[in-house]
Amino acid sequence: MYDYDPDKVSVSRLRRSYELNDHEIAIVLAALWPHALFPLELWRKTHDLFWSGFANSVAVFYSVVIPEFPDSNAPKEKYFFAHLYAQDMENLFSMLASRIHVNALREGLRYIVSMTYENIEDVTFQDKMDALFEHLSIIEENNDYKFTQHLTKEKFIAFMEEKIFNIPASWYFFISKMYQDTVLVDTVAAIRHLYFLKIPFKKEVKGIPRSLVESIYKELAEEAARMVSNTVQPQEQTTAPRSTGSRKDIARINAARQVCEQLLEELLQERQAFENDKNTWKPRLLNHINGKTNWDTFINVAETRLGDKPHRAAAREVWKKVPAEYIHPGRMPE
Image (cartoon, rainbow, N blue to C red; front, side):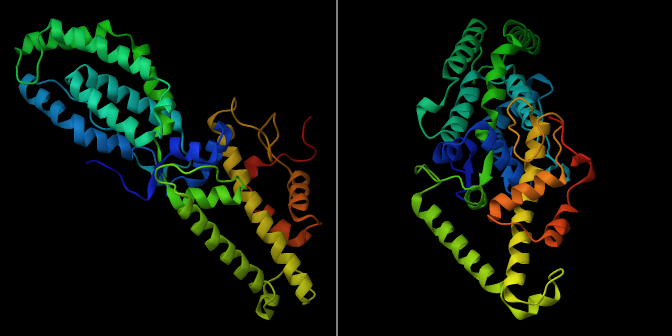
């Protein structure tokens, strides 16, 4: 009956389909932010479908403040900090738990789980969910709280406080821990990026069928063929730096520029992963001590990718785009 946009897929299903580790997930999320990453969409729809109606009724009958769904201004946020969104969802969920009936709370979470995970064994916090709902149910039964029965305002306030004070905050930690799995990504954009990262597709999941992956790979191969064809066009002689005008020289310049632009994108994504969580970040282009890079590292990786020395002037043009605060002057620390 309920479903979200078929053009989007959860991080959990993307992880399973490509067998991604935490570091690879961080790289992908950084690359897709903000236009192809939807951190609150599934939670917002769940709130609208299952929770907000009951919360609004409570506000009317008992004159208590109900939690508003957290706002997001993603286009203005430079980086995606998953832990901040996770904390917002944990706070929202715990506040709703003290106000609305446990049945509504449970149904909403079941919906999130069904839209997030491919298989039931992927749900690692089921025991914590069950324990929370059981405890909430006991408190509600002891207070004779039902959907159709309206307590007095004084009794409801006392009942709400009983939920707050008798359930430790740690019982809600599983929300933050599962949050990243619930983030939605643009399916096509994610598959394209994983292709450029050379991470292979492993298995079909709901929302990522093999036919879709193969069609995207075919499009990317055609794009690459057109790009190679364009590198030998005479009109590019006027824009290529320090070119002799030969087709071989122009192709070398364009190949260097293309590889270095990809390295620049990877560097920016790695820097975001470094800033988000230094414990899970793994150094590739950035130094393990200060999270910075230098020209020697950049050009050496470019040479490895190309299998030959890159055109130096073309590489320097791209290097100029690296933010100054990410550059370590001179030799990198050991």
